[in-house]
Image (cartoon, rainbow, N blue to C red; front, side, top):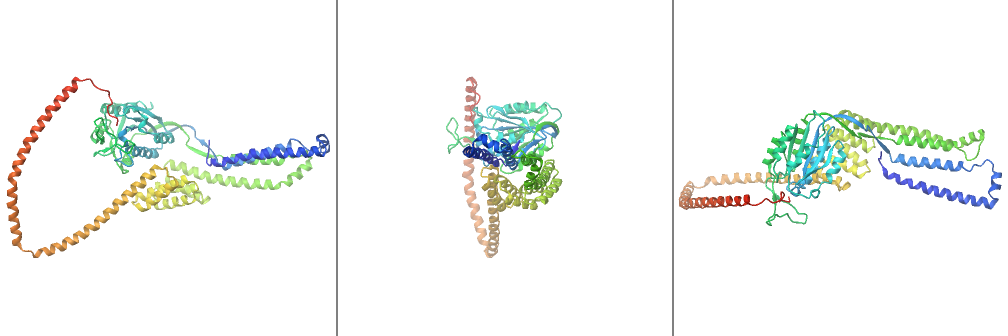
Length: 572
């Protein structure tokens, strides 16, 4: 059970205050009665007065007030909490969290880019199960395989290189651990997705991938970084150095990644600053065999404020029917008539509750259709909800998502803009502007996308995905402006060059022939020393290579005779 607007529950503190005021008033009343004639004399003169009925009526009113406050907070209870059989795959994410993943050759960093990629991949999962393994010099399971995507995102955000003390990169250990983390269900597509920068310090990754292939598991390798290499930040404003005092340069080993993916019957995908890797990974996973997956989840939440409202109304009715004195039938009828306004209010509240329920029912129906990828039906249902309550920001946002899924981008932008204007919650308003920015970015409308992302960050400054998209749009806009300027410059240069060529047509041909003869003489004079120098250089290079080879063989012999050091000598 949860509350949609739990802040209203603070109003429940009013009830103890009202009880305190009630007891204070009763104390003042008893004090006045004692002055008038004492307790026994007062009871004899008022035989119809009840001592307990007023307190019962007050408690009923307070109970109704508490339930109304709970109703405003919108209580919700999860439904369909049972074993569901759905068609999907099982995927284990093996994420490299070694220090080399802090390198910033991919923005904002290799590790942050990997987190964003996994989070976006989970967003596309509907009927699938996911697990999470982190590794460096060692590996351990961060999240067992599950269909709880909310928990997966929560565990994903807490990943840092400090989770594993033993640094290095042991891809084989991660693949072996992931292979043993799948369920025992048969006839289902299984995938191990290794996200790494391709520096395998321990080896055996090829053998582990082949073993996974024999078990019917595909191994996908996502290589993060660039082949040029970049230094690793040390968190203190500098860069990490090795034992020799040199700055460590980490490079993506794409050939090794391709070999591991090939051995695991999977695909190698290079991850850079674009979204191509995300789209390609989703496409590869969609091709895998899907089978019935059993899981226990909260598929949706139903509004329960109607039930709470009905109980509150029942308490009000009881309060009306309970009298302060001990009445006869006639008194009861007269007293009932005095409070006919309460009954009128009850008759007004019941239809209002039913109308609200109708609005919420349409939203829940549209959400079910949207999650089932029935986007056209979801659009129709959300439009019905808009007709019932046009100023509902949740309906406008959901309608925009349904239109966005059908690539009806212009109408989706209007819905998101309307939702952002109506939504009082800053986080939900940020989601609406974020989606607007995504649409503008897809259509390469950089300026509009930048403004939408900025508005989203004003509402939710902690959204890293929005911040990354904003930086990417600003970079793409800058590159686009440079390309346009270069095109204009090239056009002007071409015009100037054409004018110069026309002016050169009147030059004398004899001057050209003289220049050619002079150039030939200079070339002949320079060829002989160059030929001699090239022979001398070749001899020097040959001698240097022979000496280097002899030194390498001697060094290898010494290393073979010496004992081996610990396994992990690299801390990146």
